[in-house]
Length: 358
Image (cartoon, rainbow, N blue to C red; front, side, top):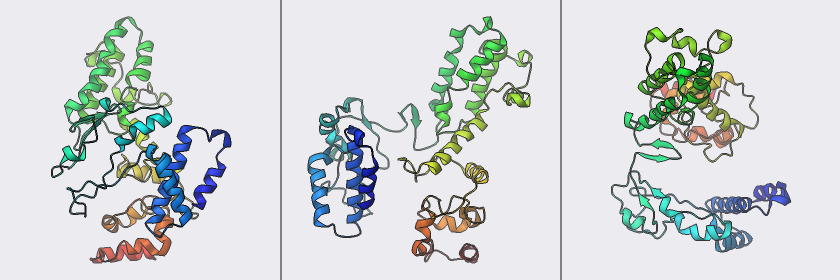
């Protein structure tokens, strides 16, 4: 609570009237109180603050609760402790002026085969859908995306060509459209998902054909330079057109960099759309000087002799369940050792454990 109070004091007084800031303050205080209640009894003053916020303002703060289905201890026939955030939309609208349109909202259950969704979602008046679905313009699926899910992106790129009348443009004009329009259209998709090889091949064919011929289809005889040369930077003899493999990797590395410079983001600490190769490249590009360890990830960052523990002890890393804890959290009371109790069962595990411990 002292940390929260000090943080509130640092905020400028002229911004306290902002609705979003008020909601952020209330939400932070409630979260801190609920977290403290799990480890100790709240004081009378803290209980008064918590009850006041919940009764007067808390109803407008979106809250989520973890649904512990069986066999994790939750009785799926008892919904007394189940909170549906959509029930607060009216109070939220009155307080902030922003109203939720439930007719445009939908819910997509995952792994709910044994759950009575009709009863659970009874307060929700929106639609119920299945995967795959589209969220914020991105196709989402519980499995890998198929061709039918990627086809709309390719069609949007292809539909740009007829309106430009590329045959009447010179090569410099077509190069500008390819570089700044066609090449930028998959950027939003690439921030989260890699392009499948077949999709990349189709988009490259569209870009290559428009660049050299001004149409959708062109053969090898129209191409003056091979495509790998075209995608090189201009200072290396290319034309500066984006290569989607390298461009996508740069976007994924940005996730790691943003998590490093600002760990207060809502997605910080969760799984990122980055591969082991991306993490290797990121770790080899930065130098970490360890301070109190509150920001450095114990397993993922290269703080131990210039390397990340997950690569020094890959077999131990597979045994760890909480992989996104910081160095400070893991070294306190030797928590990283406690997390491996009764899991080290082979000579390889012991060898890797000793190498980290020493």
